[in-house]
Length: 266
Ligand SMILES: Nc1ncnc2c1ncn2[C@@H]1O[C@H](COP(=O)(O)OP(=O)(O)OP(=O)(O)O)[C@@H](O)[C@H]1O
Ligand SMILES: [Mg+2]
Image (cartoon, rainbow, N blue to C red; front, side, top):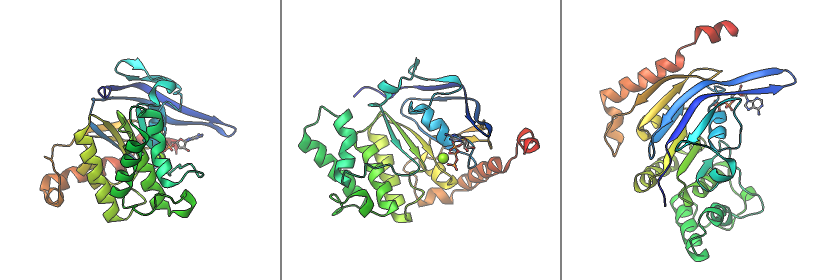
């Protein structure tokens, strides 16, 4: 497969117009994301993180600015086979069982694989996600966390060049979360996938990412971009490092920061 693209976000703004007025969700965001990096966005609720991922996936047109993949403006039709998306809430097809939902992305993006290989790959991911025995269950027969795991499997199974993940592990129990974090990192290290990840968990951001962008309250701006230096594999001992605590404290401080302009407007 060809390499993941360099993602360049230039002066991006998004506002939503409704009957009650205009909501400025993103204000002049510029970010460069290197090919193959693990890039995490943290920021207060409502600051525009999901909105940003929607623009990156091509489903939402920005009001200003642009997003380039390898220097070319993204095209909704072209990004589909390139970009995997785990939404904040799982969006499975209700009429397809778990296995068929996972196979869906591969049917579109991995036409080079035989059906048997696609099924083997889908079963492999369901197994990793602890869903052995649930392959034939339909979404309504699964718990919310199980549905989310199927969505994660669906996005990972086709090995996209860009993987957009919107708080994918928030609803999971701790052990499942840790297992899927490890698998995601393994996949990321084995492939050249660029991961753009959103989380509210500062430790999760520090354990997974190469870079973190901290966003302000709405309208979201990038307050700071942080390089995460800890060597991999990052383990329990990583959390105990004084530098880890210091960096977590720094991010927390940025998230507490209230922009005077925003504060006045509220
Ligand atoms: N389709 C829409 N129409 C109108 N307003 C919207 C729409 N989508 C998002 N917004 C508004 O844009 C802002 C940013 O929303 P967004 O979902 O991107 O936030 P978020 O950072 O992902 O928050 P959270 O952490 O709670 O998921 C919010 O004020 C929200 O109300
Ligand atoms: Mg969101």
